[in-house]
Amino acid sequence: MMSTISSSLRQLEAKMPHQIAFLYAFIAQTSFVVAQSLVQVLTKSLTPIQVLYFAGLVVAIINYFIMKRQGESTYSKIPKITKMLLFRGFFGFACAVFLNTGISLMPLSESIVIQQTSPVFTGLLAFCLLSEKYNRTLVLTTIFSFVGIILISKPAAIFGANSEKEAAVFPYRSLGIVLTLIGSFANSVIQITLKKIGGASSPNSTAFYWGIGLTMSSPIVQTFKGAKPFYFGLTVLLVLVGLCRFINQIYLHKSFALGEANKVSLISYSQVPIAYIVDVFIFGVTVDIYSAIGSVCVFSCVFLMIYKNHTETKMKNAKMAKATSH
Image (cartoon, rainbow, N blue to C red; front, side, top):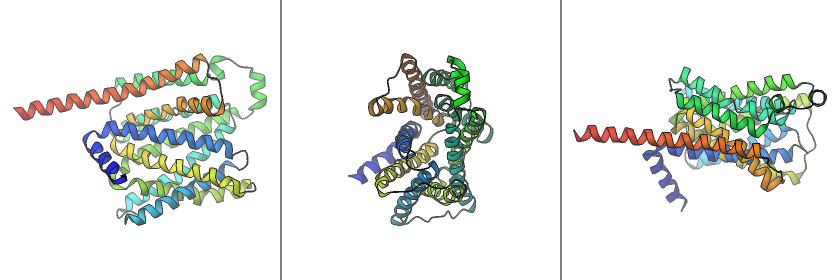
């Protein structure tokens, strides 16, 4: 059964790689939101660094055994690729630390908005480093996506808030904004790294190095902050976080290996509406009209990119068919 599904997916990857890249990216973003929802529960009992450590450990162990079973080496025969995998692993940890710390220093709504600058950074980096096009459609889609994100998050800077109260609750808000921007940019660098690695490394190998980066870096950082007591009842949730991040890393690698980085990165905008769906059906949060309109804006952009990509592929195939007939 699994071999049949795997074979069908490989055929689809070969037939329409860009469309499948969007599907894989959506799976990756959805699993990330589920993981973050579990993290939100776990951080009431553990520190964020402890959760990162266990998530990385689960991902590293799962991928190690998968790689051994498939006869894959834990390192690439190409030294440059191994260095890039190590960079991706340890830089991934730094990215997670920046984002998690930034969230703790500022309003969550504003943090969500700032994190969604990552696709913009990715598009610009892809344009500068990978020579990918940053056309009018991508510019308009990015702007439209930002409108949706702002409507959903309703940052205090735009919709208004009690500034004195906010200053009292978030005295280091400016630092939080800077750290979140650094984390967002770091995430874009990781996405470009995944694109450059491409098919030179398997998704399992990439995820393995991500897990190693978290597992090796977390204890060093944790020694400066101190750990909270761990009890066995948290094990199930920690394993689930690890499994979700495993799925996230595998499909994130596949999506960037198959599609264009500047287009695939836009799927990360789907994190916000997915998170609101989780809030409504699991945590019982009521979504207002602005959030509903914003979700429609974001998802409209995602489907617009898929439709445009399909149209471009269809036109390209038509030109090739016409050239062949002559």
